[in-house]
Image (tube, rainbow, N blue to C red; front, side):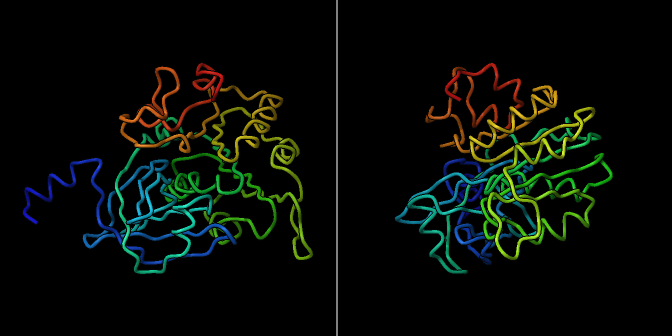
Length: 279
């Protein structure tokens, strides 16, 4: 391909690069993390909270958050939820895959700098938050106290176990984990995330909250944060699941005059309070 042709390809937001899956990690029975690179190295360098479109030939494509990144690869943690994700869970290392991006605006890093940060996540909702946690660990001196409250259905369903129980605590993060249902080997907390949050009762002064998880969890977590007198300006979440084309052309993610892919997907709860009730 000529230099002119290659430049044109890279400038076209709808034309994927040819990537390759170089590593697959089983996180839970239905979540895998895929390490993806290209012949030229890392496909692009996303900010924490940005996404990419992944595609399998003859199957389809979908938007996924970049879970983390290395010098030469991007990581995507994907749960089996449909045709494309089921197909991805069947591929092997070496599989060729289409990748394009990054999309979305990511987390407001300047707003977070110098603040105490409380991360709250449930299940696969930890995936988009993981990129931000890793960023904060890497630049630990730029932030105040860091705390993660994370929950899953069972101990087997906990994502990123090495991060939760080793790497992040060693990186200066207070990690509090709970499960809905324990088993014989589980010695940790048992209970739902909102109730555990109220039990821990982190004070709101000087803190920014980043929350991501199933809609019902977010709804109940918001009720708990309201009880603890958190202001909605302090609370950030991501609406990445609503993103479709990623460039504001299909119109499937708009909420009134707001396009999730162009104006988000990261918003404060006070911004969401002003959006249509269907959110």
